[in-house]
Image (cartoon, rainbow over all chains, first blue to last red; front, side, top):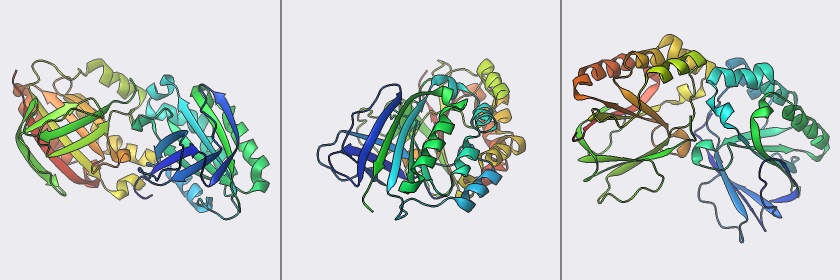
Length: 185
Length: 185
């Protein structure tokens, strides 16, 4: 695990990713842009008329145990695979009740009750994923999760998102936006 | 636990706290200033000729279980007590081996092996403490711990610092600076 990478997502008229669909799942929405860019930088270049930007950092793993880390590392693939022309950016915020829980109770809800890590493993390596933390950066969301997959995996990706949204963990989510994207091969 | 507070420490010729002593415990040092200020702000006012600034956020608890949270809450006191005219700022960085450990193994080293939380409890409420996280902010340290205590507790504070520095957890610390401060009553 390298040092944390600060990543900036910018929505506007230009960028590598087309916005195909944007759904406000809970809480306040975000303006819909035509395009989205992801920069591994804290000072990204301008992209013309910017509509919004969100920042997060890759940080360290917060809940996984050694066996889970090993299982993930053995099977997951990185971002940027040529066939992964679909992507999703899902910003979420969790409520105060979540953040007031002790560490071990958050872990128990996340995995022993909700099987968040195990569910994610079921969709590897088809769906590549990178989690960005942003609560400590003073951002409006707590997490920005970025997913990449091939067009033929789109239905399976819907299954993954549905499976997570019915968990006990998700009862703590008070703001969620689901942005689906595509790019040219 | 309120939302994370971004805190900025500025060393320079002015500020509420006098620098009485600064010790480079491990790794690269920091220039020594005459004074230090702590601002609960991301955009603090200027303090004249600034020597360095360090930023951190109060974040959420990362390791404590419910019983430990309750024990801490029952006995700890806040910052700013009139009799607490001594303070310490101890910036530390942990090495890659620490950050590569799974969550549960970091917890086991921190508490089951090193009794970090229990040792801290032994010095409450005499020593008030606030932990600031900064690894995800791209700062040169991972943590900035701030302590406040009365002059008559100075010897006990030395015991606390000594007790922590001989733990298994501290073998992962690769940079540490110990800045001791005082202010007028």
